[in-house]
Image 1 (cartoon, rainbow, N blue to C red):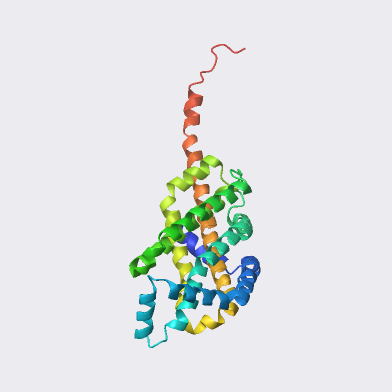
Image 2 (cartoon, rainbow, N blue to C red):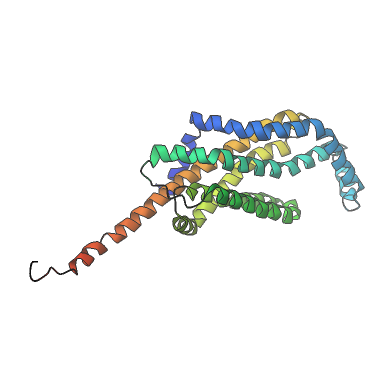
Length: 287
């Protein structure tokens, strides 16, 4: 079985572990409570502000009028909530990813290490501040890429391709680093990330598409838009579970790749030892 798929099914099983389920509630309590409070108190104002801005825009007003006419007036009350929700999705996704990386990833690494890699030595190649800097820097770059490519989302093929690619790059950049930070040395981490960059990126893209599934449900579900303040914590939990699965996937794959790397290096060193010993000739006269 491919190491990527082996780590995939192991991560799927570990998602049902009671410790993982309990840990997933912490980001929901933090981000879900904050998102619920913001949506509860500012939902109507945000929708009204977006609707007024769209109608006042000289570039968008003709398109808004045309869409309102062909929909028989059904489009006007929906466009405001849809835009607010669409703008909120990246913020919630980034928040869920950072909370999982900060609060769940260390516990997930310990869980996987204790159950599968108890003998794998921890070389502690990166401290928590390096992980934090890596996560913040990657998030800033990903958010900039999202803003830069936002006009391209108007084209359906690119809208289905660009966001998951950006989320995939961000997920691989954060979770691949964190999965190896505690156990691998700096040299081992750099070697593994370089040798497995396409596997890490592919895993991130899959996680990106999984994270996009809840977004499509609540962006396209116009009937549920009035209930968004109540549904936001549920969607935050869905995002949290997706990223918890991704963290488990990277932990299983990364630690397995690290164990294989150390085994190969140890095996490569063993043949050289007898050869070196053979060059040490015994003395001709015993002392």
